[in-house]
Structure formats: C-alpha cells, structure tokens
Amino acid sequence: MFDGCVLGVDPGMATIGLAAVRKQDGKPGILWSDTVRTPASQAEPLRLRAIYQAVRSAISDQGAAAVAVERVMWGKNVGSAMSVARATGVILLAAADAGLEANEYAPLEVKMAVTGMGNAGKDQVRRALERLHGLADVPTQPDAADAVAVAVCHLQQSGLNRAHAAAKQVASR
Image (cartoon, rainbow, N blue to C red):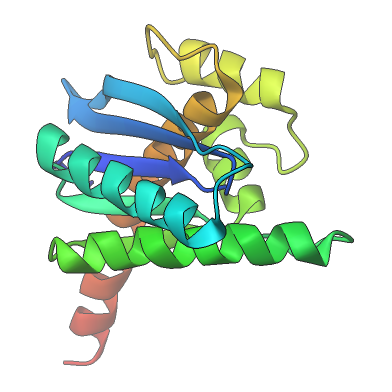
C-alpha cells in the first residue's frame, strides 16, 4: 500500500475540496483538509490561478508524495463540466510542476473503494470513512469530505496497482 502523504482533490471551479491523508498504523489518517472557494465574479483565468496556487501550497505545506483527483463526469450540464475539466487541468499541472504522480479516479471507483457500493450517497461515504476506515475528524464540508474519500481510494488502489505490476513482472519471467 502507498505509504506517503496523498493529497486528495475534489475539483471544481467554485469550490475545491483538498485533503492530505497518510497511512498511519495500518489505516488512513487525515492530516489536514480545507475547502477553497473562488468568487464567481472573478474572471476564469484568475480563478484557475487561485486553484493552481492553492494546490501547490497544499502539496508543499503537507509534504504530499502523490495527488489523487476525482475524475470529471460528463452529465447534462456540459458548461459546468468544462469548467471542472479546466480546474482539473490546473490541478494536474500543479502536481506535475511539483514532480508528483497524479491519478484520477471516477466517482464510482471512489465510492466502491470507500463504501463497497457504487451508488452510495455523500452521507454514506462520510459514514463509511468514519466507521469502516476508522477516520476521526472527517470534514463536515462535503467537498473536503469528498477529497478525503479520493485520497483513501488512492491509498487502496495504489497497493492493488503495485501488487498487479509485481504479478505481471513475475508472470513475464
């Protein structure tokens, strides 16, 4: 399993959830979380810069070794999805500029990793973080709680990915 600090990000243009989570005593522990808001009255390039700066600061301040981002889902509101996609782009750029690996996870993957159910609601995800994963101090703000869930998903998936890569290497011998 991934042992470093992972910065989980729930992207958005108006509100971005951020959470630093690390494996502690065999289970995830929340180190820090925050919600960043950008004013709708501000021009989009300035909002994107604010998102970039917030992510770079979080990476630096929290000592993140990886970044995990919830993947944009394209629904009926294409305009909103485009804004979230732009925000995701600057988040990925901030990770790359810091020399970090960045992984994206679909909302279904995050819900499955945290609750075992792909159709779990936000309340179920929050309760599962507390009860199943033993996390104390899960943020009450939904975007920050979602960022914790993305980070926990990464902690689980990175271990599975590492085991899969090792198995492939053994099989190719």
